[in-house]
Length: 136
Image (cartoon, rainbow, N blue to C red; front, side):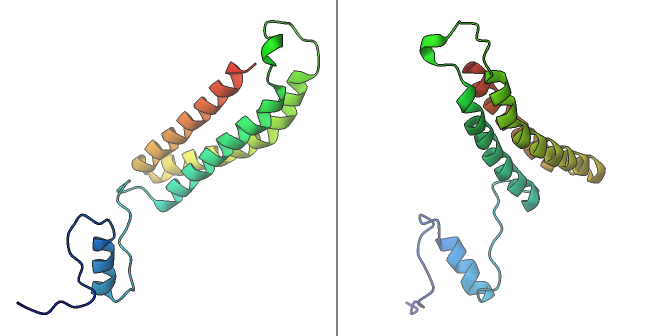
């Protein structure tokens, strides 16, 4: 039986075993890459995370103009549409420009896997808009 070294870990049952083996093998210079989205650039994942945050901010900024449950069905002539527009315009404008540029880069560079992440960001925005419109 050979003696065990301190950095050898047993069993694939622990998620950190492969990470520690890679760190020991490379001397701590290189971490293994995240393989949940293989082939997708890290910038696209960062932009997806930013879009998730942006869609949540959109819902929070739109919520002051939502109808009160007791007043549903009444036709209001107050300034609620203006409150809604003033609240969501900065968020929508920033993310429209950001996502348009991101989509253009995907088309120009032909990174089709990043295009799938872009479409996932579109899904998050559609969910946010549907949540908003369901409360009007």
